[in-house]
Length: 360
Ligand SMILES: CC(C)(COP(=O)(O)OP(=O)(O)OC[C@H]1O[C@@H](n2cnc3c(N)ncnc32)[C@H](O)[C@@H]1OP(=O)(O)O)[C@@H](O)C(=O)NCCC(=O)NCCS
Image 1 (cartoon, helix red, strand yellow):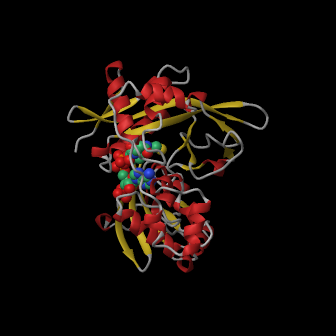
Image 2: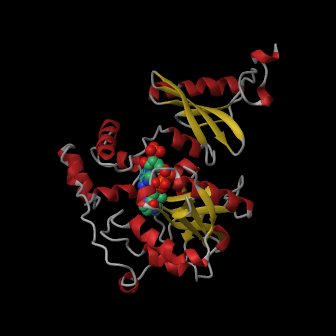
């Protein structure tokens, strides 16, 4: 499928608002679209709007996706205001979901934002979707919500190395994001009637889990399955009664229900985000005895990522660290996490050509 990305024009405005309405309809914890179309409508007239980063995705001449950016700030403890980018809503038409449209919009807009010289992108979103583009929990940079909260759903990405060094504080987005329910109801009247969705109750999932976990989900206010998108797999694992086996079971049920699955903490996506690898393209080379090798391409560079899924194997990372400290000419370790190491791809990287068969 060919996905074209271009800037939104005034001729797209209503088409995009209808698209956002479709994309968000019954998608989270709300049986309608919860004002996301109104938000786009208002954002375009806000001083924080960034027109250069307002993109639509087209397939065969039809607009099937949209992303919009705005300016936001980090208020540092010494009262400095640091300008950053925020984005959202990101909308993909339901008929085109899981076909790479959202990814194409993300990759394109991040690359343009970096080219335009912006410092960083910070936003609230689905915490198990965006790490695949290189986003990390904002609190890893010391950045928290306006009232000091911290969740995996508040994410950040530097647009150049060290962009967030020494920048901590409270993240403040444009107040246009606080949509007034009355204004929303009024705006909704401009669109053709659409029946609110019956959201699938979480019991479909929790009835298959231990009673203790069922209670935990209720304590966290989860009424509908779609609400789980707000939490990362890592956060779910911290909930009372949860463990990795149950997370795998939940993922199995979510897949059956056609819902997005949760990332386990050892996921290669999270390792790459942790290593600061931006919008990687990955392919699995092999998985053997809980150790997986991935070929990774990011911003014109090629790497190999080795992921150790079992904790006992993850200790092997210490051996790599030791070797690199001894300065024995082994493969250079480009980075490591608790579960993975990042190496250059010797097959394709001219810098490390030693030992290639073709050199003999
Ligand atoms: C979320 C959304 C933008 C993703 O766009 P998309 O074009 O469907 O996504 P892509 O094709 O690029 O990526 C698909 C992958 O992302 C995963 N994914 C999609 N939504 C996800 C979510 N909420 N949480 C975790 N993973 C998610 C899919 O499971 C799929 O994984 P796979 O590659 O392992 O199969 C789109 O589904 C959408 O418009 N949703 C409704 C509106 C919304 O929630 N917007 C985002 C608000 S933060």
